[in-house]
Amino acid sequence: MSDLIYVYGIINENQTPPVFKGIDGERDAHTISLGKVDAVVCDVSQQEFGEEALQQKVEQADWLHEKAFHHHEALMKLYEYCTVIPMKFGTIYKSFENLERTIAKHCDQLIESLEVLVDKEEWNFKIYCNNEKLREGIAIHNPTVESKKEEIAGLSPGRQYLEKRKLSQLVNQELEKEKESFSTLVHDSLQAFSVSSEVKKNWNKDVTGRNEEMSWNSVYLIQKNQVESYLDHIKELQKKWEDSGWMLEATGPWPAYHFVALPKSEGTR
Image (cartoon, rainbow, N blue to C red; front, side, top):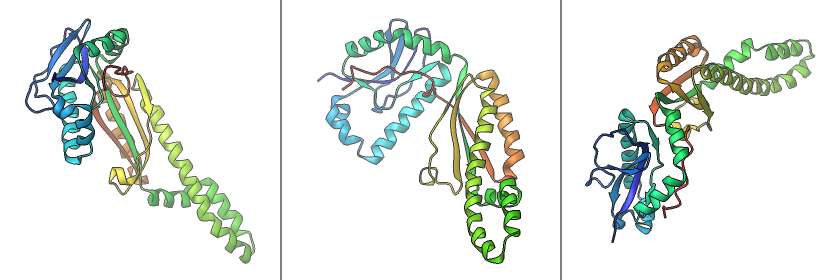
C-alpha cells in the first residue's frame, strides 16, 4: 500500500527549508519540486492517515491536539527560513500526480501570493474591554446619558421613577456604541501600518478564557520594516486607554493564513 503525501506549505523553488521530523514523528519532512514552486511535505502511511483512519483519529482529542500543534510548529519553523504559503492542517494527497496536477493548475496564483508575502508578517490584534468600568464612565461622562439625566430631573417624582428604570437600558445601548466606535477608530489607525487587513469574528469568553469581553478581532499583513512602528503605536494606545477599561493585544508574527488564496486540493480525499 503506497504512502500518502502530507503537505505543510508551498515555497519558492530557490529556498531551503529547515529539516524537521514529519507529522508521523518518524520520517523527515522534505521538498517536492513542482516547477517554479516547491511543496514542503512528509510521507505518511495509509494505516494512520488514510481516510477512514483519519476520521477516527480526529475524534481523539489528544491525538488531534498533538498533530495540529505539530503542524503549526512546522509552519513556524518554515516561516523563519522561507516565504511560505501555509496549507491547512490535514492537507493530504493520495499521490504525487494529484499534488502536481493541483499545483500546476494554480501555479500562477501561488507565485503571485508568494511575491505578495515577501518581507511581510501577519499579526493578529484583539481588543478586550472591562464592561463594568466602561459602563461607569458612560454613566458619568456620556453626553446622551447626561442629557437624559437632566430630562429626568425635571419630571415629577412618579415619572422620574419610571424613566430611571429606562436609564440603565440607555447606558447599555451607549456602551455598545462606544465599543464599536472605539474599536473601529483603533482599527483605522492600525491600517496605516499594514498593506492589507481583515476583520474577524469576536470570540466569546468560553473560547478566550478571560473575564473581559472581546470587542474586536482583526489581522494585518505588515511590511517587516513597519512592525516596530505598529507595535509601538499599540503600546501608546494601551497606555492612553487602559485606565478607561480597554486592553489591546497584538500577537505574531504568524504564517500568512489570511492573505493568500489557497487552492482547492482536488487530489485529496
